[in-house]
Image 1: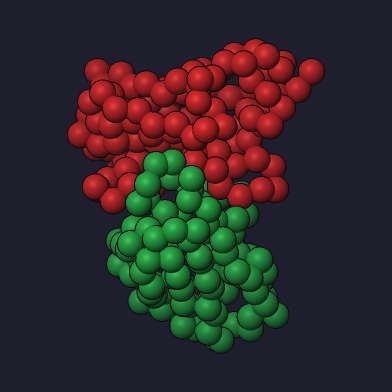
Image 2: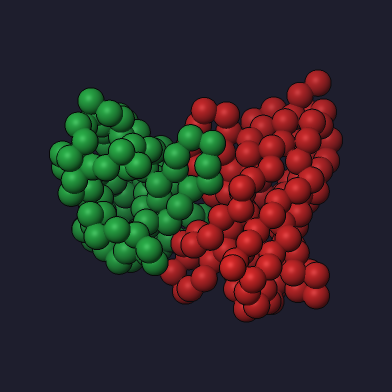
Length: 119
Length: 107
């Protein structure tokens, strides 16, 4: 069974940093692209970033470009999101998602981890 | 960036009735359009990809149609478990973008 488990969320001050992790199991991790999607409280879904299976290609939303870095460790079956220069508007539940095919859809989702940016 | 616009924002439907949700793209996305369902407190779930192909395990009462800039998700006979928020997402261009969602509520 495919499982995605996010961790690393918490309370951080504006301007601070946080690293999210997503531990994957039940599939050949290195074969698939992965993505992060976030959802601010009471709001809709916002795509944040994606990375190819090898890690050689990365993509970002304009709202996080230059502040967030997506990466993966295929030896540890783990996806990361390094978040720097955090702002109040980055407050959200962050989901990691598995992209199973060439159609860049979020086929399997984790349960999410909550990031709160506040002083 | 491609802007996805969903309508209506809220749809009130009685159980057993048909629900029709719309999604419009600011420019053509071909058939590179997906639909997701999200229930309160849960992660989203993929329903439809390629505008009209149901994902694994999705009941046949869910159907998608459209191409280019206009798309529709139809739920043929609403069940109690279908009351949720539905999002469309285009994957024709980076950055990926979602619509703002349509809430399907009990009438």
